Image (cartoon, rainbow, N blue to C red; front, top):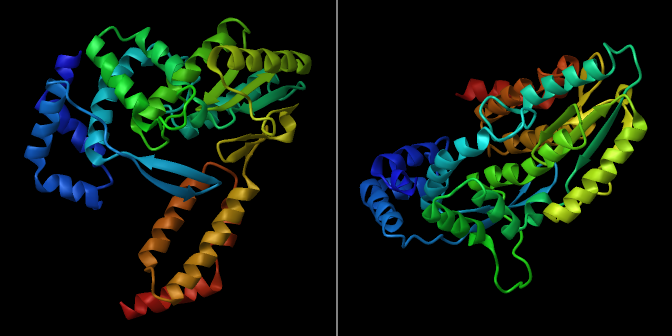
Length: 349
């Protein structure tokens, strides 16, 4: 496997995937200026097994909450892409059907539709009372144990050189000054998304094969289980917590675990799913309103163009169309000041 990874064509295709939607980034432009030389250098380092991982660039992204993103150098991101392309098929056939992240044709909206089917099935067409267990992992990416992750990878991957390369990538973000067990993988890496899915695949099989959870769905560390029996969900919650603590050294977030009837709505992936309709979360709507107010100020100061606003609006409607949110979307985007400024900007053009 390692020999097939070390080819110029494989690195070039990985480079094309890594630059997607990032052609204007400074690091990509610099790399492209000496593309053949840089890919040749990367190929030589991998072939002679002298490759080492570069330093990460850290920055904070404020979306629903503050997240510390650690971005690897562009050349290392190419290596991440080529590694994932070779090892992902080995794990894909080992994932359960209802794991919906970082997999082809297993995105957010397909997970939403699947959960709606679960709600319908567990309640016998919404004619019987049913409940759901909602939980997620506390500080998931920061809590992934390097040794456990490496063992899970080596169960499937036999190539020693691939193993060594994976060990290098896993430990690349570890600060040796902290001491103790090596924990945490950077959120910004493509490999981290695959590693995180592999790590919780153990929990998936435990829930399906030992606890017999028929209506179980997971999107990264966001887990929902439906059942007709409320007491059964309490037992499942305790069993999952024990498994996570003993086998994966993880803990369930104490403020994000609860059991409720499905009629109260299941919060999942930015939506709230009710038996007969889907709503947007209040926090999502408030965040959009704050963004629009920010656009108004920036547009008045000529810091942004109407094209930026139109792109953001199209993105919002693409997200909101999967819920019953037409009227609220129309209301929050009908900001009089914003509309007048857009018209004036068009006239100036």
